[in-house]
Image 1 (tube, rainbow, N blue to C red):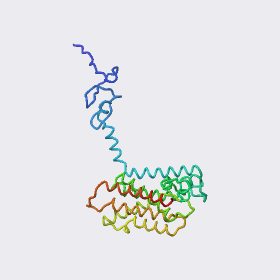
Image 2 (spheres, rainbow, N blue to C red):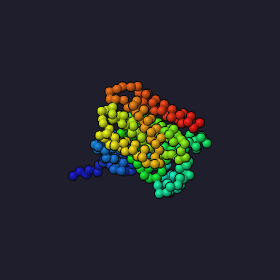
Image 3 (cartoon, rainbow, N blue to C red):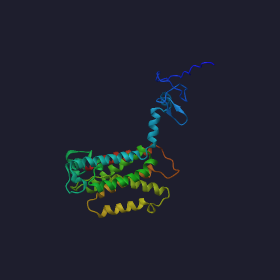
Image 4 (spheres, rainbow, N blue to C red):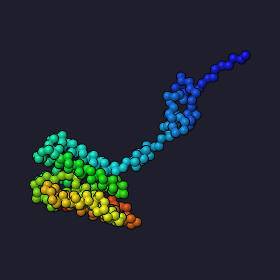
Length: 284
């Protein structure tokens, strides 16, 4: 009768003191259970797992492509952050009081404030200022819906440019139509109205009757409220929708119509520059 020596197990390549009967299904090196990770087929060692991962640039590109309406969400986040910042300074700005807080004055749009200190940043900051929870809730809801509709066909950069073109168009409209008012203006509604105008143009060119969609009813209701309810900025809404229609008519061509790619970037940039220059000239 012969004596047989027990088999000698190989050692884990990462833990030399750990015998193992398992190995990586990709490279074949012995590895213990603590090192091996289950994959689609078999188990792999940490080195093979790392080597099989896409490069950082590829992972970033894949993550970026998976984010729906990313610019829309970022703009919403900025609006909400500004609202919270104002609310921290004065809780009455939630909509339960009638006074205007110092932080609202710091961001709001008023021709006298512009002419006195030339604080041109107000042309933009006023578009992120909201007076009460209902005000921001309605604007953010519409922004989210319109962003889902427009950001994909336009692309993130062009959508962002369109948004700020409409925002600054709304600020220009305030100065043109309500420059003599002592009120403080703010809100994303100028930009939102502009997006509604651009979306309406896009739908019309695709043969869609907007009045048979939710967009048509939303647009008509908001226009009715603009002209019937006191305290709503007529100039901001009209200025925003005018820029939105103008830019959308070029940035969102009819199906099958080819145009230079640069034009979709140039038009909102020209609208932004033109709105700022016109605002400066009005204020003097």
